[in-house]
Structures are given as structure tokens and as C-alpha cells.
Image (cartoon, rainbow, N blue to C red; front, side):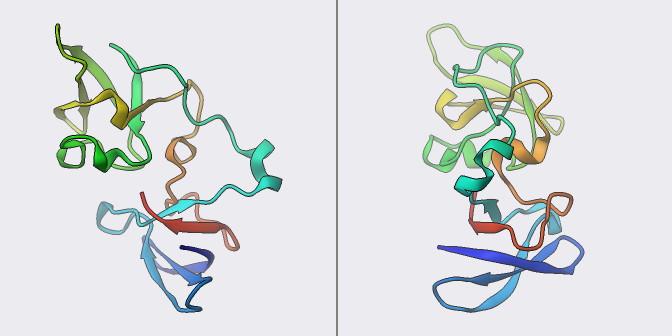
Amino acid sequence: FEGVILGKSRAGTAVVKWDRSGDTYGCRVGHDGAHDLVLVAQKSQASAVPPVASARAPGLGDSVVLAVGYKTFSDASRGPLTPGNVGKVVKTKAGSKRLKVSAGGREWWYDPEALRVVDAGTPKAAVVGVVTAASLRKGARVKRGP
């Protein structure tokens, strides 16, 4: 379900009013390292949104982020890569499609479908559409995620 950001409530949280219920409450946008919201692209915003990731499959040396729906691919949600953070593919394994990604000083093997390649020069917050304290904008359309 979707809602609109009304503003900040405290460090690392945003106040959101949800369309369906009309309820208003705080959601994490960096508080305790968690992000509860992703941006909902509007047709009028489409040309203003920077490219977020390459369509090509990730490979050795690529900068990557978690793809939408990453939790459905093996154990990707247990790895060190978190929404809003960029990791680097540091190793591939012969005979396997899995990729070893380094993020936050840790490494983890991911299915390639759980990852998206980051285009050079793309702002980190735009990469996955995760709402961060820095990207928080009053009136932005959001949904629960990632």
C-alpha cells in the first residue's frame, strides 16, 4: 500500500500518512540502520529520476545494490549488503552463478538475481529508491519496502 511523506518526526524517521487507512505514523529512514520506505515513481517524475541500474547481469568488479525482491533469492537477506548500501563483486565461482560481494567489511555469496549493477555517477539513494534521511522530501509518494 502507498502513502505520502508528511515530514520528519525525529532523527532517522519520517511521518507517513497511508492512503488506504488514513493512519499516520513514523517509519524508519535510517534509524538504527533500517529503511522501511521506497519511493513510488510518478509519471510526471519519470524524466527527473536518474538511471538507477544497468540492465546487464553483475560481474566481477561491478558495484551492486540489492534488487527489488532480493529477499526471495536464497539467503540474500542474511548477507552484509543492506538496502541503500552499495557493495562490490569481488569473486565469482567456477560452475556456479553465485557472486561474492563485499560490503561493510564482510563478504557474502549472492544469487545474481538478488543484485543490480550500479551505473557510474548515480546517487546512492536513487539506486534502489530507498528513502533515506538525506533524500526525505515532504509530499513524496512512498510504499513499504524494500
